[in-house]
Image (cartoon, rainbow, N blue to C red):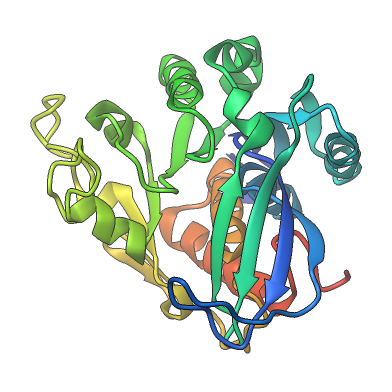
Length: 304
C-alpha cells in the first residue's frame, strides 16, 4: 500500500510447501537410464512456499505462512528458521507421524537444475487447515499460492481471497489441471516458459488452448478475464514479461538457479502488496530472481 508518496510495507499471506532440499552438483545431467557421479550432498531448506515467504519478507513485506511440516527435527528447525526471519508461523501445522517434505535437486555446471519432490507433510495440508487461517488471508494485501500442495487447499485459499478482495498471485507450478475460475482470479498467473508452453499445449486437461493459459474471456462475462495482461512469464536470463510490461535482469554469472523463480515470486508479491505498479513490481522481482542465482540453494543470501 502507499501513503502519499511513501511506500510502506504490505502484508503477504503465503499458502504453500516447505521442503528439505538435498542438493548435488554434476558436470551434466544424466540421460534416462544413465548414471553420473555427483559432488558431495548438501542439505538445505527449500519448498516453494517457504522460499517465496522468505523472499517476500526480505523484500520488506509482513509475511504469514500457512502450511505443514513433519513432527521431526527438520520440521521443528524449519519453524524456528522462519520465525527468526520475521515470518509469522502461527499457521504452520506440525503433522504427526509424517516427515517434512523433501526435494532431490541436481545442479549442472551451467547452474541449471532438475528437481524431484517427495511432498511428505505438504500433501496433508487441507482445506480445513487453510480455512482455520482465513484471518491471515483476509487481512493480507496479497495471497501468494503455488501448486506443491493439494488442490483442495489451493481452492480454499482462493475462495477466501475472492470473498475478502485479497489479490491472488498464483504461481502455477508444477503444471497440473486448473479450473478456469482459478486461472481468471489470479492477478497475475505466474509461470515460467516451460509451464507456459505446457498450459498452452493443453497438457493441462482443463486448459483452453490460449497461449497464456488465462482461461476463456467469455467464462465469466468479462472481456478481460482471459487476457494475457493477467499472465506473468519468467524468461530466465531474459527477465520476465507481464502482459505488455517487461523487465530485463542485471547481468550476473549464475552459480545455482534453484529458487530463482521463487525469489522472483516472493519479491513480486511484496512489491504488489506495498502498492507498486506493474512495471516497478516487475523490475524489483527480476532483480531479486537474478540475485538468487549468485549463491547455492534456494534460501541462502549473499551473507550466507
